[in-house]
Amino acid sequence: MTTTAATAVTNLLDRIRDPGGLGTSVVQPPSLAGGQAFALTLLSAAQRYVNTLERNVLVDVPYAATAYKTCYHIDSDPVLGTGGTNPIIKVIGVQDGELDLVQCPFEQLWQSDLGWFRATTGGISHTWTTFGHDVLVIYPAMVRPYNFNVVAVPYIADLGLSSSFTVTDDLVPSVMDLAEAMALCKLGEYGTANSAMDRFANRHVEALEANRWKKPQ
Amino acid sequence: MKTDVLNLVAGLTSGLADQVSASNFYDETVYGLGDKPWLTTFTLIAATSQMHEFDLPATTVSLRGVVYDTRWLTESTLRSIEQYQRAWRYIGGREPFTYVLQDSPKLTVEVFPNTPTAGTAFTPPGVFTIAYPSRNFVAFTTEYRSTLPLWLETAVAFATISREYGRSSDHFDPDAQAATGKLADLLYACVA
Image (cartoon, rainbow over all chains, first blue to last red; front, side, top):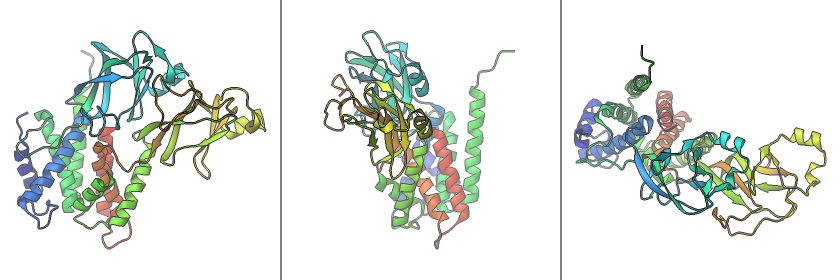
């Protein structure tokens, strides 16, 4: 994690042939500082999207579950939601201490138990799922308040000029490609923006292929 | 927030986007997200005695499921219930076990059979703890939001811009429409 945002901003402005930042700037009058600030905004967004795609940096958030409650709104949650103490983008897992709860599809949950919504246990919850993106389900509900750990893709805060990327260096090229595509759309360079998008998509296909487990020969 | 997305739209289009139409396209884009399982929620709905139908919240885009008291209801078609009993809307006495979604004039859920009793009273939005008010309905839906999760804002901004460049105007640009639309789809795919 050695790539600094300041270097990335300079590189991004060079790549889109706007080293002075005037075309990228969204403030009036246009300025280098304005261009750098907007480039940082794009890089921050790109880093979040790439990290969500690759699940590169995850967080382990202590989460207090409420007794008799199976469903939790995520985005309005005071811990996990927007403006919360540990805002997240996507739930990847739920743990009870060192035990992983089993993930199952939402449909499978209600197909196997029509009464899942108010099912409770005095022992342990064993299953988790999400209804779409924004409702977390821990099943069955505990009959007492209980602490779980939610493993999730974090909402990474905006970059500052002096900060470094949160994602590892191998993903910085993807972040740059995505931010480049966004910035080129801003400049009206749609042909080259398409190239950047294709490069990003191809890089992701390669990453998926590289991550796929292959049977030993 | 919607204003943040519109500010981003204005910045990315260098002020070309008309603020009124961009606002409308934002709404259109977010309603379109209702088909994707992102802006999901669940809502407690009070049941009265012999209740046959209820309206979904005004922000609802699509219904994904209904619970009555403790039971997940199965969805039926109007024709299948009519074949069972033409006067099905008058039948009560047991707890509802199925529902039909009517989409005219607004999203309305009709349950079968009618509720036997009124649900335990609660103050909206209600709580989902041990004090969960029994014998009421819970609707699982996708919804329209003026305040999006922050991670969706950039994608929605590009989708809004795509619509803006695609409308008849002095800045109509099919290349811009295609490129920004493609970028929005790429960002959606990243968080899918």
